[in-house]
Image: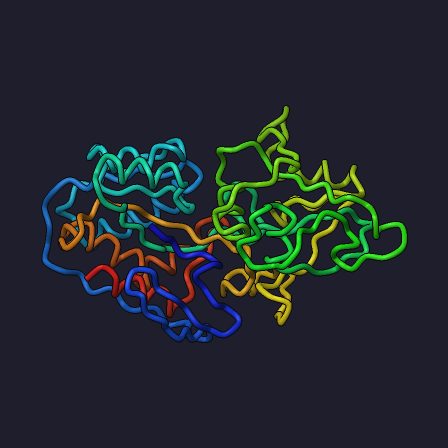
Length: 343
């Protein structure tokens, strides 16, 4: 199962590849008008939804708005652990899961093993620009003294993985391999991550290394230490280590370290991770967020699920992001693409 991500989005060219339809779709990022929501037949049933706890305020906005359109539905919405969304949908305990991130490899594997087919995921929005804890876009962190100002995903792949699935012809082990001179030329690169499993580093593996494991030399840190969260831990390590590189939320940049521009390829464009670049998905490390349902191959989506997903992807659902505390709506053209997948 493939989810939307930088590996499937040729963003600089405005081209979207849909893994669901094997079609290449031109995306107009200037399009800002979302499809209007037209309520379908009135429904009477239970609709059970489970969400990652940090996304519960956003889910509440959707649920309250949807209730006005489908008052006969009994909506049961619960915020819980980010690990619960996929298993509870797989078991049938809940109808819809909102992990507010991409699915993890073991979740996809477990769903296939139990259900015999892929989970059906729907792209519903984007993580935050620079708000920790809301699936934020990831900046590439280096020490403040590092002369490097930009990097490509292929170079990051060659730093973090021996397989180099992005096609770079050589391993990258020193800052000189990235063009640094003088004392930096022979300085080894210290690449940092967190201990798996966690969403940040699964996303890095999915997008940067295209699913390949990290090198054994990569330094994996704890996800939490005292009052520090995962992005703060990486920022602290990078600020203390001149040879370091890592990934973290733009909102956690601290003195002693900086972020550098990122591009898909050496042809650019190199993006620094501005709000505009993140919300239009032009920044390569922006993070889409998903919902998941159990949809057997060849079968229609249950009417109550299709109706709720149509609401989320239409104007009222996407406009709700403005009051969500940091989550970002989809580019309008992508909302239209996802609506078409519900048929």
